[in-house]
Image (tube, rainbow, N blue to C red; front, side):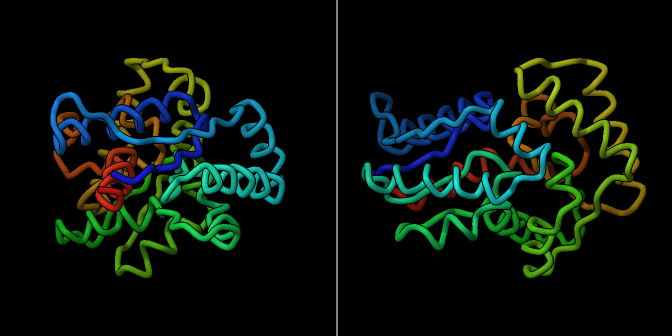
Amino acid sequence: MKTIGLIGGITPQSTIMYYQVLNKLATESFGEKHSAKVLINSMDFGKISQLQTEGKWDVLATIMVDAAKSLEAAGASCIVICANTMHLTINEVKEAIQIPVIHIAEATGEVILEKKLKKVALLGTKYTMEKTFYTDVLKSMGIETIIPDKEDRAIIHTVIYNELAKGVLNKNSKEAYLKIIRKLEEQGIEGVILGCTEIPLLIKQEDVSIPVFDTTTIHATKAFNLSK
């Protein structure tokens, strides 16, 4: 297979999940002794998080561009940004390099359409839920996206940064997430996007009665299939 370039560390927990998914797919495709060809450029999440809080997306874009360029120079055939939120910078990254950059929202939208769904909820960081870089992609694909109310968005965001980013799984937080999903079901959603790469640590398909879209697995699978 071709080499996949991962911009990781945002967070380390999600990067581990990408690596696990890619290697599982390699084993399933090529045999039990095989593993994926991966290059990882791991960011300092403390720095990334601080810049996000300060709204310095131009600085973050420069960091992502530099990371992508280094992976391209090292021989990557495509780039995967291992975080939903940092797709805010994807246009700058695409313009700076010659190899494909796989958009997590596009990959997720394709899977939603395969299930013939048109109305889904989006859970993620406040940046992913409140800015339009994600929902605009889904809208262009004919998918209506519902986001939680302001209070629930705050709960989701806080759990991501204070718990999931550190690998902490809290039973009460899981129940809070499930309560939010149930409220969204009352609004007619047909599925729910786990639009932060750490949320699948907490919420699984078996926890929810409607389809769950694990963006980490979807994104990594798209990259793998393009690199076979």
